Picture 1 (cartoon, helix red, strand yellow):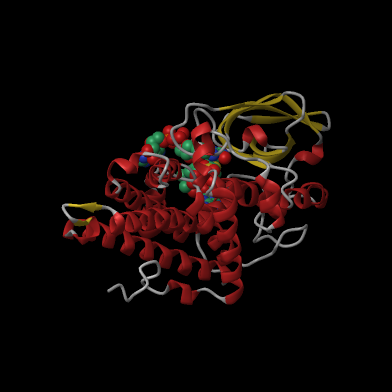
Picture 2: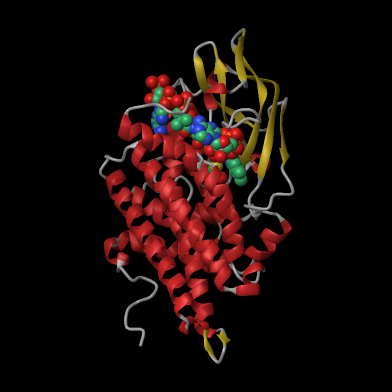
Length: 388
Ligand code: TGC
Ligand code: FAD
């Protein structure tokens, strides 16, 4: 008999408050009704359905843990749970929300002028304006301090030159938060994408995150007024603070992807018959299912704990690295085992598993690779910097 709840073995749902549960269920319904029916086609065709941005805005999912300016102002755990449910649908949707809320809206909210906040945040919260975040460059990935994109003063203006690479939402964005080197260190610029000299080229032939737009941004003598700079921050602390927010969403999000893979494998194993009985009845298959279930629950506990620390204002960047490092690698392991459990069906988009499995390869790399988070934790526990 199956007496326990195989979908919530550790009763993690008991750690979630009433309001948080309602938010989680709302997002789950959105994913069930609006994402799952079409996601295989979007992934296959390599498109992100931009029209869903406004729906996500009306659900309060864009910049949801920010206060004021049309943002929902939920706690961080609710934001995490929303990411979890979105990524149970597809990492592309969680990416969209991470970039919009944590990477584009957060810096404007935290470091922007009143004018920048008024101009962009309400429209971005509503999904009427889409944002992107340009930090990575063709020759500057894990080491953003080596960026070449630069901004120089010309009279009262700023003039930006450079190329950003692998930018989520780039080709559909109305506004780009671009990080550039200046005489006064790295600064952030709020760049409307219709500014002359700005262009975005979408990247094709991706085998991962196909239901997400990824672009190159070219800045060719982009002239901006003095007021385009984010006044509240200079140095790498600016972009790295945004990454803390987005990485927090990821460490919750990947639990959703892993859960979707585990549940697909569980359901399949119970119905698929070989050698005269369900494959779930074989010890080797059960072992895989149990390992997946343990991983999903362990990762969810880590996420919930980090959510509570964040809500208490106590979460450190090293703890975020712990969650990003371990939850992403756990999710990849779950996805690979689930893929195997589905046999040949595991390689088609008729089932969600291989889509999650290939998406998670991007998640493993972006927002700080596995190695970068290992080194961040290494520095935290030893005091020794081993990056260079
Ligand atoms: P380091 O010398 O350690 O620090 C430079 C300055 O930054 C401060 N800082 C932080 N501030 C806030 N949060 C953090 N996590 C911070 N880490 C460092 C630090 O205090 C210092 O400030 P100050 O004022 O003293 O100058 O910097 P480093 O050059 O040694 O680099 C550290 C390292 C390697 C950890 C960092 O560069 C890093 O995280 N690299 C990975 C780059 C990365 O994650 N890129 C992500 C690009 S965006 C993306 O991938 C979006 S995908 C979106 C999606 O689709 O979901
Ligand atoms: P590299 O830094 O060149 O790393 C290559 C390998 O070397 C990795 O395994 C890495 O861990 C290892 N390595 C590097 N340094 C060290 C070291 N010191 N010690 C040990 N190993 C090391 N960026 C943005 O700015 N905005 C976005 O919206 C965005 N979206 C993305 C979307 C997708 C789908 C992808 C794939 C990437 C996105 N990125 C974005 C870029 C992403 O953040 C970078 O790819 C990532 O930071 C790694 O940089 P890189 O690809 O240049 O790899």
